[in-house]
Image 1: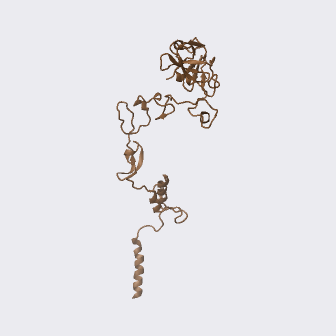
Image 2 (image 1 turned 90 degrees about the horizontal axis):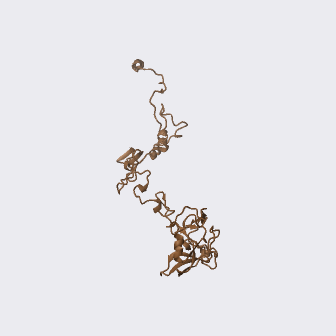
Length: 326
């Protein structure tokens, strides 16, 4: 009886075979036309360095040399994932229009496009709208914003000023005679180098003040103070070796500060900077156009020692004309 039952069971197994249809051979490898998959390593490298990666026909090709040899863990991959940031995360209103970015805020998560508009400055309104201004000239908005209204050497919004600064220059004294004296400290604005430029037309430019002086300092006698004013005001090209095209009224008698600016207190007879290009400088006194606090006196500067005095306007002194200045 038992043998019959075993036979039936065996026969049942054999008879059941035809019920499972299909070949018992291993399936063929995936073809190039099949759908590929990225590996976890691809995902990690995309998050870590933006690498493109390439889908594989077999998503189970890694690790290549043993378990865990190239694979990053899911925790490592999660560590590269962007995180929600509602405090510092950017929104489209924070990014220039047309630029894409990955939003981190709850109301703008994922790939986003910026919305800040690009603006053009208008001078028809006192208030410029918010937006991005790539490059423009502020003078369009404020016509007073010019280099001539900005202090020389100072830059505002890329505009470097040319307005001259009335700085107190160094005296020229370089020898020290006592601790703390001018020769030791040498305070004041440094003189430019060269101090003077010979313009080869009978004029000399002082590069410290920008004033233009007659090169021949002994040409005009002048006489008394009234005569000195007239002699300077009527000077023009063709006189005193001038060929600069100047006309009457271009030249004038310098004020006392202008005349005083030529003095080098480290020198005397004449008290002018070493190597100056002037001709026929007198060691005597030169009239200035500045009148003393009385109608009968005016100030002069001594080219012998740089001293400044007031004297009666009837005295005869030479004239050293100047032009230009502020």
